[in-house]
Image 1 (cartoon, helix red, strand yellow):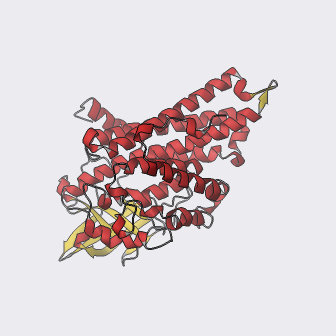
Image 2 (tube, rainbow, N blue to C red):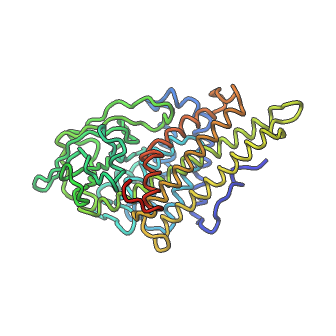
Image 3 (tube, rainbow, N blue to C red):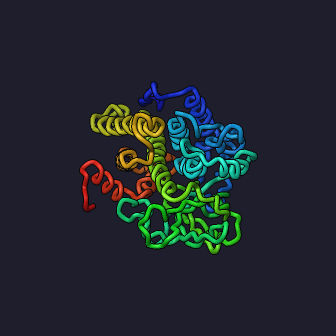
Length: 423
């Protein structure tokens, strides 16, 4: 029987470290996560079964040190030419076991830390400030991108049209400190999980000036920071989401990531990374659905033959395998684009941001539809939690919704490819 390694990887992109990291994550996933993932839904609030697996991969194995410079205890991927490909492989392998764990890992280890650890915009002073939090411990440490706000939904990601004008979280300069006030909701790794926030703010409410967009780091234990209880969602139990309130929270002025204009530019690069990593969250899950469905259709019979030998069933299986292969191909291609700005342009360019959105919404749409097809093939067996397919179905629907969902992705894709002027 074919395996997950028979799906296409562009071998010319891959490094020895990518294969090494992928092998470590796969071994961890098969030993520490897959045997217990069925109980994660009941553990959405306490994370008693989820926490040990995070401790192993992030703290003990040390993957939370991925992007920090080597001299600060990190792996140094922030200045490598294969950071995105390695990150994609790690998140895909993790998502095969549980996409929510992969989301918490990808956001907590890469997404906001890229703002200060990734060439060509390394902020050495902030790396030195926060590296010990992640590198000098065997306990898992998570970061948060505190972006979405109650009144605006995906307004913050919709920079081409809204231009930051609806951001309500404010940063006011008072001497050598920023004073932050505002309310965020839904960030991955909130609900008491994270040790560090990257907070999207405005220095001038209502402004559309890119210089007034600020990205400021806030340690979670500062006075004035309050986190709500986690939400109970349809899926994604290993990814906690809640509200965060900032009331007169004071941080040093140099906790701003880069400064006027540059904060927004590199935030757009974060949007590209978020969308491309979402393909990994999607691709790992759909590949595991392929595995589960292969076993089911080989073991179950119809008229004396395995289900997979039935023409109608084989057609559905072919569509799922085709989509899984395409999702992996576009995911690796997207990662390669991020790793080679010399060929494709910087990750904050309108072209890369657009293609990241387009690839992500294609992958998420196909995966959600394909898991629905798998459930149809399996009948009532598919709805049984013992089979794990319905878990992927619930998790993938949430991947489909974030970063503005399909609608914002469609608008930005049309704007760029068709040069729309009024969308």
